[in-house]
Image 1 (cartoon, one colour):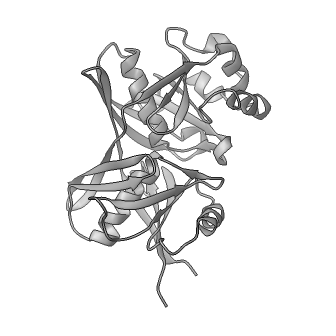
Image 2 (cartoon, rainbow, N blue to C red):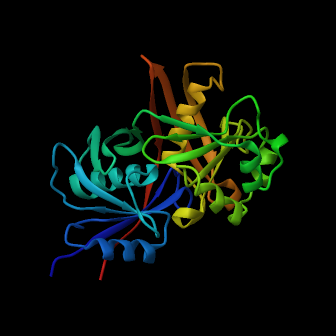
Length: 295
């Protein structure tokens, strides 16, 4: 009988049991779409990924990403976590890069090493696409905040590097801490815009080594609050450069996420304006938590 092994890893984590959990299923080609969705719901992490084959196609590995509610074309921590599992469990050798064939296209993930083990993985995301501005009054009502707590130097805007997020600049860490979603207002808002999830941030942090504190609310995808969101932070990195939030065309920042839900994460953000576009990379650590077989 053929095995269907899986791994559980923590992504954007410097040790076990922090960061964002991910289940990665190998040899997934024989699993039906319906069963992939059921397995993702049973795992009930923010996402579960399926490596369809351990043979490369067009220089990359075919991978699908599911939340408990639906399939996604792209997501950040599943991309890094799955690349790590491929390096550790499939290739079993040092490699400088792994490419994933996702529905959004092929995404390269590069590796840096310490003492022979992966230290930081970096994914180069698609150049950000900037959508419409979102009404401040509406977003304040969704987040149970006042309009005065939103930083009016910068827009509230939809941004995508594969999945749209609403990026909301707040004035203080206190405002970030106080944000909580009014579900009725949230679902009313997302019916009228492309984005289905909201990222709030402020340039104040719990850890003085970091430059940004971030929270992401994604109830539409079955995640009330996400502890670490690579796709959303890639959108944020592009937004910061476009609007010169740090008065520069290039950023290299540390963003903390998940502190408010006791799941602290660290995301490394790089972005640079170049020839009319913005190049975005998001990096972080990955830690193996468990291995097993589906039965």
